[in-house]
Length: 475
Image: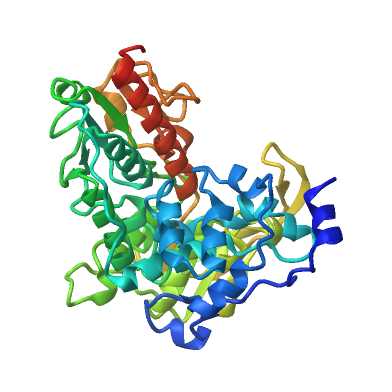
């Protein structure tokens, strides 16, 4: 008998709707960079946790890339035992406050929740965020138990979600771990790519401090491939994990991309998030504050960019996307937040050319209307141009958010690591092993741009394989 049938036959029917999470009013939040979602209070968290039916075969856990014991930590929340809940969470996830905010739970753990057949799935992400924030308010982080040191040393190249996760897992086992980060601040895409209103930097700093409390060392402003190569690091370390992400932005290659006012999402968001340009002149990094801002693309990075433009004062902020809203890959919650905030969606629209004035400043975008045909290899309906449907859109700032590739520096300075056609490192998918003995890799440097939790899952899997390699010496 299915878990759903057992529920229907033996239990009182749980609430069909999730406990809603309070948010800033849209008209207020577009004028600040404070967090949009305000989180659960204790009573709300307990009420939502009690919706969980504690499945004997928890599909939600199988849907989680880092295999969090989801029924376990939720069961403790339902009992009001928050201390045990966060301890259970941190057995498998060192970044719960991050995951609870930015992971696409609706496509992973919540998607397979049994309750979704009766109504809303359990709000797993909101409960994860709640328990991480509860711990922070206690100002008594979980005690770190010391483990015997292995005597082995592991270098982590890149301090993003994959690298942080691998580092935390390896340190808990007893290895000496050191992260080498190219930027001046640790966090990777979490610090340069995700806006303050979705992931406050104080939250990230808290999570990084926990990783450091495990004994992980961190060195910033260290560019592997320039400061030292992979081969040079391997003379000091017994194994190495590459988690440098995918930071090389794509452009469309259309006429006029060299006009002033055309930016990659990487540059635009890095200026605002990492360099704190939204607090100019307190921080001296300038940022383009256009009146008519167009963001090209339909993913989460596009939503982050266009919602940032609104908060910087754009009178009109729009998303230009070649498919319809139904095919848009961004999280539904982010699309809904953008709509609430007044973002204009120019769907079924393809940019063709950028036009500027005599000084080279962007003024207009020539676009083409599209229609949808049959599904392509992505499973989404293919956009087809409509001949003669050209039209113009006024824009003085364009942010191109159509994807990224891995930076080629590692490949260029490590010739014996095999690289794929798109510049990604080729690995054994089960272990993260590269073609170079002692070197593992995971996250966006392998998969291309993907989710935070997928990168964390890759980091965790590689950490286990690295430990096995260090113990056995077998490659």
